[in-house]
Image (spheres, each protein chain N blue to C red):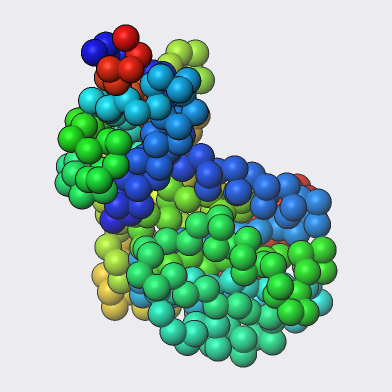
Length: 224
Length: 124
């Protein structure tokens, strides 16, 4: 009997990373800007996305969304009220979306081709831990945080906020009754991801949406 | 809690690696699997170890040890012009000068470093 060491140096999520790289290349070739929205359940991803889709459509832009949940197509139906094509991904117990699920749902999506889109939004499963490990090939990862969640969320879940390209604070219309400490929240986000763009929004009143839409327009030009 | 799918992926990768080895080593027994896991990889070592026995049972990896080497976050500080290791993941500032650092050089790793195997009798 002999024992020996075999070097592997292999990424555990290599398969996902390879699929994500292929997706990223197809997004780039099609000229579509893809965003991955990540937050806890209840942050208001769907309301924020619904408003975003409506506003972009009103500006004549071509948008679509994939939305992940463990079960139900409630969110897809809600988002479809924007008039944009929406496809639900049910993960049946899996706590995150992965690149394979995205690829499968982009294939054979009736009436939707990447080349016919300006923006594709992916609303991830509500979870602040696992989605951060899975690259979906997105150009921009957006971490959302609502005023009801506590200002220290970025410190509690540093991985997600550190891997984000932009941060969105939602439900700003109820910031005051919730006793939301804006300065602390902004400082905490910056502590984990120095220099990140932060948008303070309300899907209900539309506050902060102009700035957010302006950012989307800039990134579209810059990244595609 | 995606440790179960991560462990499943490790077992698959190691099994594929063994299958690709020269004939004499294919039936090798795995003694140890060593991982490199960054502090920001969103993976809890205890959860990996908990899943290890369950997933490796009945495979060539049955009875093997899982060794998780945790790697601290390393950032590059533009002001100091040097890499610096962070003590935790609560503040992305240079520990020497206190400047915010967004240029991360280490901390997201999630990889199989190496495996230790025991070749079968036929190799002798």
